[in-house]
Length: 179
Image 1: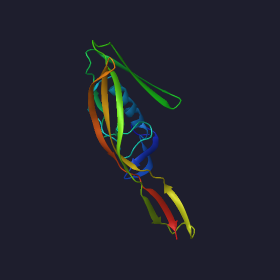
Image 2: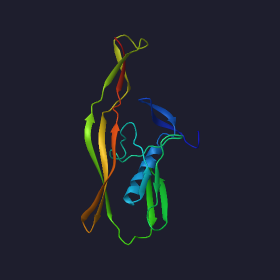
Image 3: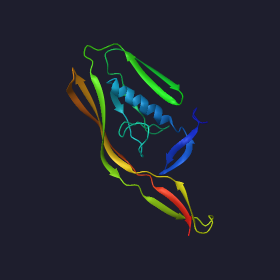
Image 4: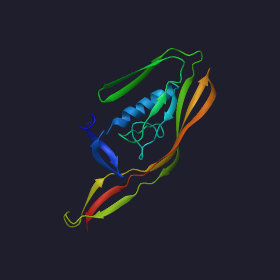
């Protein structure tokens, strides 16, 4: 363990490997979505290199030791309290505070703009039995997407803020073979 983190799956140079801090972005992404819905100001947020499966496109927030950070500001008129829980492998983050004079209904909208096809990469591995193939990495396609924060008051849209436009790379399927 390093910095209190256990090993888990992380992306490294276009591959999936076990590394320190894998899974921490599920926490930062959950906090990001909670901060958005609490209508807090987002200062700094970065998307992952590859799409995640736990939040819609353009609603993730990657963090890394010495790398990208997620930063938000309490832009409300009163202090807030952040409570997080992990139960049964699920994280919940809640933000509590005093009501403002005007409270908006907050909607987060994710849009896929483009799908980037997955590629398959074949590598020769003479250690495999002759005529066999082995999938060493399952891949997936990539995406271009964007997200908005929409504020409604009394059922009417009063603002639509572009949060980000992001690109997620495709992750190649890698097949080793000995022809």
